[in-house]
Image: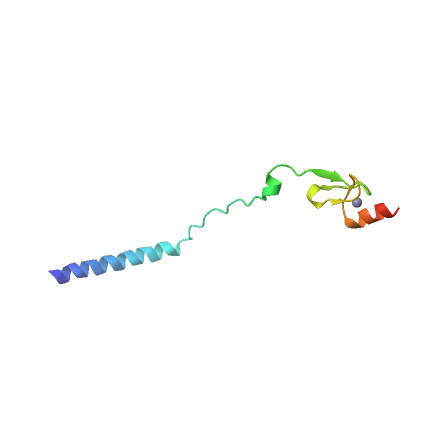
Length: 84
Ligand SMILES: [Zn+2]
């Protein structure tokens, strides 16, 4: 009687493994891609500054500060502004 019980268990295990395999053949559940949001872009709008040399607007994080309250879009423009 014990042997029959074991046989039943083995058959059940094989059946479970087979059903798992077949379910694996189906396209795997992939979590939806989390929307990657840049914290700086998604958050508050970055302050825009105007280059004292060329007038181009650029984010404050890229500003090159010169003398007094002047800001420039690049170090090149800072030097050209101070040279003239
Ligand atoms: Zn500039």
